[in-house]
Image 1: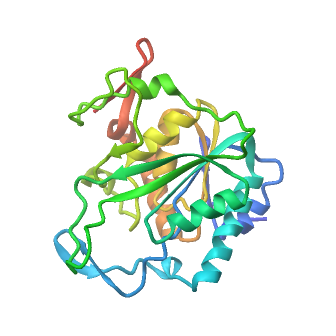
Image 2: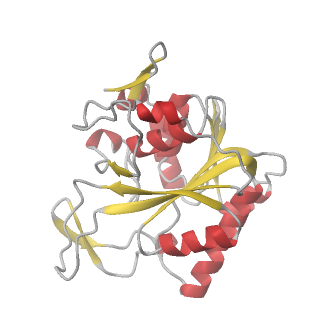
Length: 278
């Protein structure tokens, strides 16, 4: 039995292999899962970071073991996630072209039902240094429910009135579209360190607000530095995260304990249901 690495106020972290941890959840079921799996990008190439040429390698966990082995890995965690997902639950999976099309195919093969394909546009994406292809400036986030019969949660009205003063465009009571312009993580979200594939709070804020409710159970099987959990703690969701790297889990714990974390994201004015951002 793998015990929690950290457990406080409905914010629980496990250190270990994703399958080993999930296999011990016999009765635990989740309303929402957000998965940011390895993209298998660590191929000894180069990328641009802070205007400098750096190695694209992120760690052994991000290295491909070959097409067939990568497929087996994806299938294994998709099946494990489906087993712990409630009948009306849903899953979000992020990725770049290097992995997302495999995941889309395997979601359907394992009888998930894809609801939306979200384009996360990065207006401040770094340039590509090879000048041999278009600059990568987006990721795809697939949203799927457990089955075609699932009655998934979608907080449609909240998405219509989504209002962020940092963005020039606001929904103004119109349907939210499937292209989301969200910058890469700002400095204040890296105060305690960062994960090489860390997602901005705003991205998870939008995902969790749109497809879950207060008191729901949320799982992140590749939690990294804890962005999903931080948003859950602010939105009053119950959270469990798993990661194989203690260093990143320690960053997640520091972020969770930061009393200023609410100021990083937003506060909710329940009277008029307006999500106001600082």
